[in-house]
Image 1 (cartoon, helix red, strand yellow):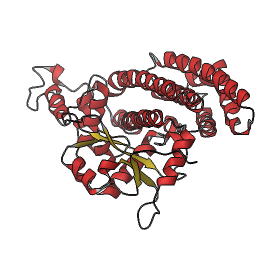
Image 2: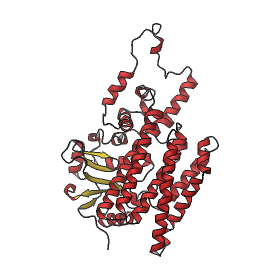
Image 3: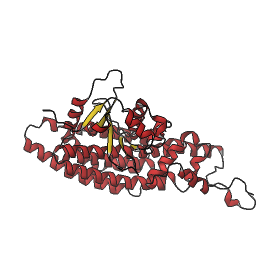
Image 4: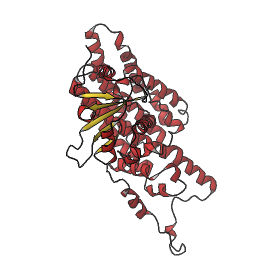
Length: 398
């Protein structure tokens, strides 16, 4: 018998009523979840989940951004990662679903928890470590990560869990899941502690990847043990820990004490105003939108000044030579801005994970059963985009 998602339907496109609600501020989109907007009577209640189609998206946590930088995304996703900012410009269903796909790509995380199984996590760990091997000789902290005992424990736990489908004895299966959950919980806390105080982007992103792999696998263990409340609580704790670190890292290391530098012409192509607003909303846990721009303007020096009277008015960020300028610009555009984009996009994806774990708890489903339920409800593709699905509560289906 296929498990059911009572009171929910699956569509290939976002209904017109939901699009209108997004355009006029009744609803807000964060990651892959559409909710009633703050200030509305049903604030926070979920309207729809936007998910990749079953088998339509592979594992995206590769760690490639640690070395190469993640594409600096402008356009549609710049509006969407900021909790629905300027959504009125993207009221076509396909445009929004495409932007949500871009969010997954920037976050290097798949939006569907059902597709983040142990085998996928193991592949993600392998891909991450392949990437890290290319920089370990130049980044001492990454070399330490790769040689640590914790890394070996994480690899062993995921290798064992990957073989879970081959275990026929239920007692052995439960014992493996229980033991692995304990090991992964310890590793999650160790990597969380290691994140504190990191001030270089490669080391921080590498450690963050290990933390997330351990956290997602630990939550998955309890979901497979049919303990959805425990799974949801662990995931929520991990997301809260991640946000505490990520917001501090964004404020102190990435934005720094001169965030108004992103308003200047040389960084403007990589830092449109919607993205700057989204970064600051995330880093300071506020929803100020374009009001942040006014705050940044007030921190800039005056346009008219007499340099000989007050040398302090010279911008501290100005480079003394062309090579120094080019080096600094490259660092901002290839490291700082992509990392800010990645953290904001990951925040949205992790919020979507929390919503999906709440859904599994409500319907008493394992991740595999959730996937089976979605598959059973999914209509034929017809002419619609086959890459994404819209899981709706019935009242919004029309």
